[in-house]
Amino acid sequence: MDLETPADAWYTYVAVSIVSVALAGLALGVATGPPPDAPAAANAIEGATGSEYAASATYEHDADRVTVDRRTITMENEHGTAHASFSYGVVVPVNGHERLENLTDGASFEDEYEAELRDGDTHALAVFQDEVETAYDENTGDELVAEGTLHARKVTVDSGIDDLEPLTEATTVEVTETDTLPGEDRIRENIREVELRYDGVEGRAIRFSVEGDYAGSGSFEESRDETFRDGSGTISIEIRSSNLHQPAAEPVEYSAEFAGDDELPERTLTSSSLGIDDVHERDNEIEREADFDRDHPAIGLDDGGNYDVTLVAV
Image (cartoon, rainbow, N blue to C red; front, side, top):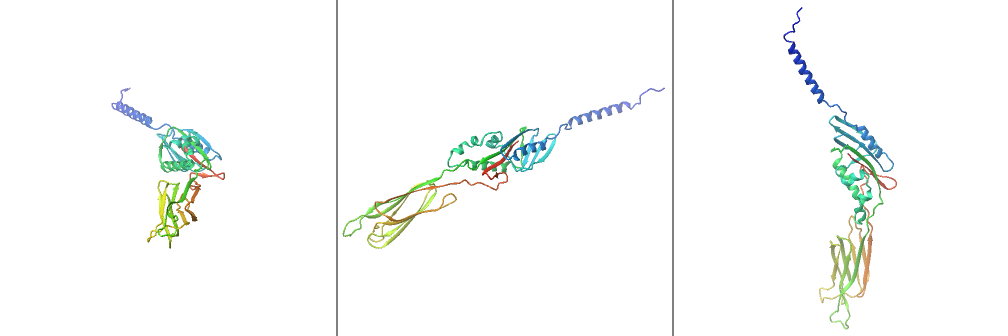
């Protein structure tokens, strides 16, 4: 019996060994774990969005990158990518926006927006809405670096939580200079200058007009326009005819027309009888309301006047 090994057997053995090692190495390089569980993350988010009241949810995950796009979530790690959608509402990814992230972690609206709530010229809810819209525009549909824990919270804020303090205006009109009329049989004081003093709103534009009769003969009507950039100042009108430099006989009439804009209403003050010793003081209070975007897809308004939005930090 010939028990000799064929001459090429050892070549075959070596080749098989090399292939086995290569396959083993390939197997070690193939991903062995599952991709992130996007449906579970979507369910966690829906636990917040689907609630009738303020609610929150937390989900631990192994995604490296997460994309939230209105009603969908995409999660990715080294093992693959997974997608899921949620049925209730549009959510706002807030990564990179500190105060909104704090809200998803459980901070109260009153704590995060304390400064705005104290400031009578700033509406806290309007600032919150602006920050939500900014986060929505910056993060929606963009891939975000994940931290391993997803936080979702439906934040509900009463629209009456804050008010803007009303604006106040104070207007004073009086005669500031008098004069006599040369050649009169008897000396008497007449009106040489009328002044309007204003203290109120920055940028307020006023047209001040004075009319009446000259102390001698004839009539007049004078107007001045002024915009009070700093919110206060005066408008002075001197009454002096072109001939004889006549002052005005008392009383005179005046009007003050306040121009309106997006924040300030039009307003007119009038008087048909301003004498030398008269001081006309008028105060005005202007109510203000914040301007809210009631059509944003991620922000809702319920029948009770509460704004709600679901914030998500990944």
